Every structure is written in C-alpha cells, then in structure tokens.
Length: 315
Image (cartoon, rainbow, N blue to C red; front, side):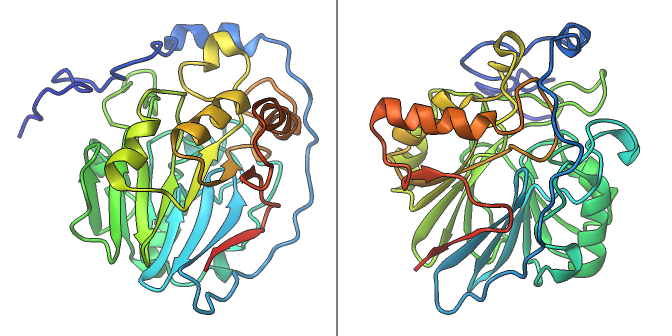
C-alpha cells in the first residue's frame, strides 16, 4: 500500500522538514579530498562484561560508536549494533574500526529488542544483524522503509514506525522520534527509507537515543511531547568539514545546545573514536565538547563521554 504524503515524505522519498539539505552524492569526492587529521591505526580496548542490573531501572553500557547495551528489567536493548571491522559494503570497503567493541559479542546477555535508527553502514551492519537474529531472535524496531533490508538478515519480527509512533510489540514503551539526516546504501536509493531516534521508558525512566542527526528544531518537542528525560545518548563526532557535514551531523557545540533543548538531562556523547568517517582528529570531539560545556557554563557531570566499556546506571 502506498504511504501517505506527510511533512517528511513526498510520496516517493523522505526528507527533512527543516534545516539545510544534505549534500548530493556528487559532493563526496570533494569531501574526500579535504585534509584529514591522521588517526592511530588501533587503540586498545579492554573488553568488559555487562554489569549486573542489581535492581536499577536501567544500566547503559557504551560498546562503541553508536552501539549501547541498555539493560532493563523488561528486557535488554541494543542500539545500532555494529560489530564488523569495516563500515561499508560487504564489510570489505569503507572505514576500518580503530577500537574493538568493548563488550564481546559472545558476552552479550540475551537481547530482546534491537533499535535501528537508519540504514547507513556504520549503524546498520547486516553481518551483525544476522548474528543477532541467529543467536537471540529479537524484535527489531526501525523507521519506515527498512523492513526489506533487515529482513534479509533473518529477523522474523520487525516493526517499522514513523516519527512519533509507539511500538505495539516491544516489552517496554518505545517511541520513534524525529531526526535530521538522510538514508542511502548506494547512490541509487537515497532517502527511500526514513531515519529517526528513539525514546524508551524503563521503570518510569525515559532514555533518549538520538541515532544519527544534525541539529534541528525538534529537540524541545521530544521532552515536551513524551515527558522529561532521565538520560540522553547524543552524537558528538564525525562533523568536519562543516560545509558537508552540518546538514547531517551535529558538532559538539550543537550537541550541547540539543542537550539544553531536551531539558538538560544527564547526557552521554557517542558516535566518536571508532571509525574515521570525517576529517577531525580522534580526540577532537571530546576536547570540543569540554570547551562547549565551559562556554555555556554547564557542568561536565551533566554531559560527558563514557570510557569504551563504561556504564551508567539509572537507580
């Protein structure tokens, strides 16, 4: 059945209702010629075991990039699971992983739900999804247009949602939220699938996972419509050069403004230090985040990054 047109779908393709339009595919070669700050080939990560929940409403462990394990009494959730060594076609092309996942795949507890924000290779890794489908057979929740792709990995339970729609199948409350981004797996399928963030509720605590997004006017609406947030997971990396990236990724200053717009919840930065997707140095997002927090007089205890393998608990 054809989808109805909306403020972010024209009947054929999805689009961002506000903000700059992402650069066309033809601009990629110019971006790739921009000077790049070299990254180390490898940064050692000591793998950890997920913490015990021990009565907490949630425990959130940073595995790497945009992959978090969110443990709750209602079931364990994995966000944008990425365990492959390259973020690109066939797991043979594209940026190579600099840091290994901080929780080994074999050490994951049973996963009940996978949240998949969009179809880019560094967020939607088919090899990892196939491993999860085989081992856990979880529910996968994703924005509109992604069902065919993810069903090819062996998932049997897939729930596609539009912005602001609520899951009917998850063991806890999960709502899809707007983001400002784009989708594509090839030069020919641009914006055929939607992109999004998520708000989940565990024991009354609301956790926001932003997925991949530029800064946009929707951040105040998320807490306004769904209620105050206890914890937010927000991207801070892959933002240079700004002429190319501003339409799709926040820089740390914009991430801090998003934190303010969301009502100032405890916030954890993500989407940094794992794959060199853009031109900034590996440590620059964290330095720029610290500077942006100082400039706005915000305590670093309110917006910080976890060590790879670090965990935050919501009591």
